Length: 155
Image 1 (cartoon, rainbow, N blue to C red):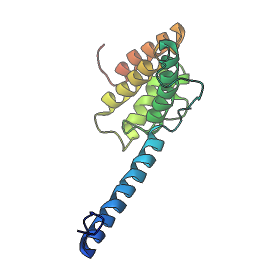
Image 2 (image 1 turned 180 degrees about the vertical axis):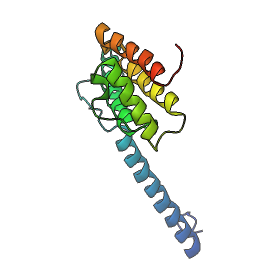
Image 3 (image 1 turned 180 degrees about the horizontal axis):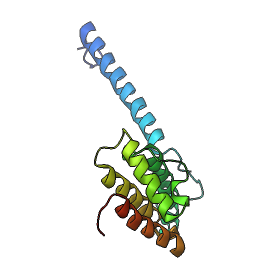
């Protein structure tokens, strides 16, 4: 014990303590980087009070824009199958044939060609949700029927 009442640390204890401090600092930096990655794209507004809640309409709008980006990425990079460009813009027959062709030639799919093609079409319809017009929905439902016919499956 030192004259002022504190406990003196040995050299080994000091080195061990400094190592723990450095590890803690690295962990804090790592957490800060993780937080910045997780909050990327979210804007911070100083006008909001810390305890204030957002209205449900604002939350759904924020979710909708991120959902669009997410579904577009899945459509592009999914392991289901490699799609042709603008595949869902043609007639029901064109959509069905394109999906069948993509499913049969894709090396990235994990299940049968029929299942992969039908999954991608269903995924597109489900992700479009309320933004899908009645005519577009009819066209995509007709494409489902055509796809079943293309693969020789009964409805």
